[in-house]
Length: 238
Image (cartoon, rainbow, N blue to C red):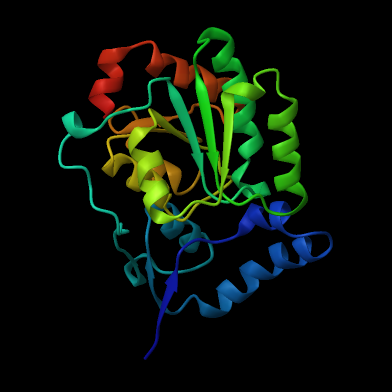
């Protein structure tokens, strides 16, 4: 007997990561092959993915949600963490279309207009045309001097950035869980995220981070400013 593991479904990601007509083919075929498999026992990592599977005929009793684990060691206490001197937003992960990194850059520009010493760190490999477009966006930004691009980083640098940054911003179209959020939280760093599958699972809104009411750069910027301007709320989230 085999058991199927499903981290996440693609759905709208097809239209971000694949070109026409293959994106349409993938989008239309996904429900078909899921229907053919919907009698299986399934392991997945979030309630969002479970709900996705139920829409395609899987039985609730056959879908089992397990927790995602992290490999990095959580910080022992908040007092041991030294944040960057400047209020720093971190965008961490591959720079590709479905991650919508350009939304983070736009939100940062809004934040920077209100907080002159704000800083944005972007870490991750810039993939394809989209990656080049985001790098061009940062270069042409009126606040280009306040945006740092690190490229792809190793484990040690990743942990350092997660620990020393003040906030993590995540604007993906869809995630299975949003493991980077859990990793950031383990280092004393809250996340501000879009309200999408996976991220609404990994962030407890108002408790460990903030889930945006609207998936727009303006709403993202507003929530970041709220945390930067309220030390007590920020401390509670940490």
